[in-house]
Image (cartoon, rainbow, N blue to C red; front, side, top):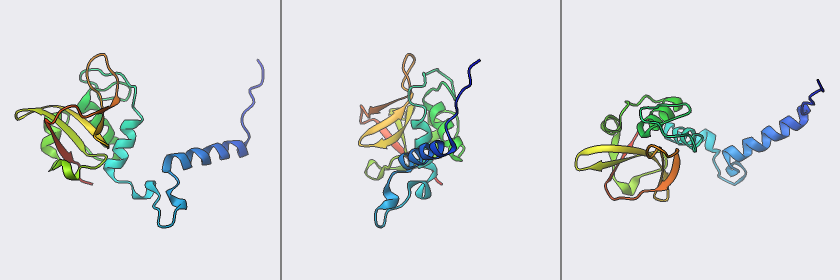
Length: 157
């Protein structure tokens, strides 16, 4: 077998530093800037975790780590951010602080409803978009909110 050359400690350190800067953003270099890692809330962390699952296949009833349904993705993301949520979209809606669209923020939950029945949930990312596990045959992905039949919920820290 041939010898496998490992990167030097110095080159590994440079890579880690570059990845760290990319992950937290360069706000620490701006006057008055706040490092996102320091300002992170449970909802921010849950959104980051959900973003890391983009492309994972949809599977009804799945709660991760490799396959998800809609409420399984939100359950998994918040659990790994430090907050326990119930299993279903309806129960998650009942457990959140209900907020108007005018104050929604990235990391808030978006609940799709028909009448009084909640049938789908995603995580708001901003700009009218959500990250969600839509349906059988799809993957966790970013999409624009396609209907006005949504309610918003905020998970308390």
